[in-house]
Image 1 (cartoon, rainbow, N blue to C red):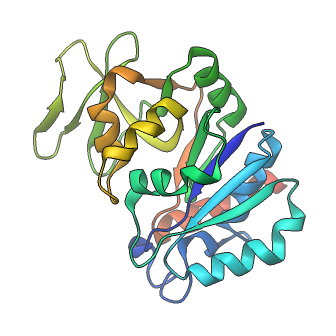
Image 2 (image 1 turned 180 degrees about the horizontal axis):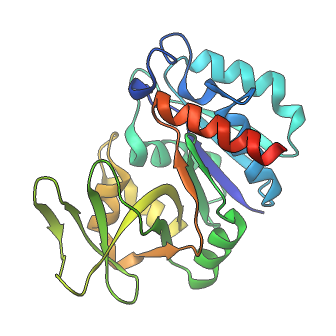
Length: 244
């Protein structure tokens, strides 16, 4: 069995006004909501158990899953976060009881479109028994990058805009790579979340457990973060082109 958590609880502030009356997960691109594309890719990759976390306009996400779940050959459940969203790390800890804690868990931001083989990323983590962050060598608007050793073990984080560095970042040796918003976390690491606050960032958590985390660098990765209005238009052009 392959299992996944789709992170869909965010406020979607960068997508306003599209998210003034609906959650980011239900913003439509080329005729379908973002959540639909993520669920389709998970289904195609052989995932059979999926949890979608919800906070912002949570009822709309619950309604979508209830009325559309039959379209996907997967068991789909909701992890409700109230009265506040629990951030990327807290979301995993909060939903952990809905998963088989003997198996790896793939986590996927709902606003990410990519050509990544989700099955390959999942299987690589499972075979190595290590949590893996899918990364790529690309510029980011935030200028924030994860640092990895030559062996692709997580070592640190750097904000090139401010010069802030966390962990170990060695000039000329560290590989600075951009996080994709897709990762596979092993059950042993999820259990370590029990001592953390209710709300926390998965980046902070991974940096504090860097000896257990590797980077997964996919060849030819094409990735689009549909987090702002202009990106929605770009995603529509991309998806429509793929349909013809």
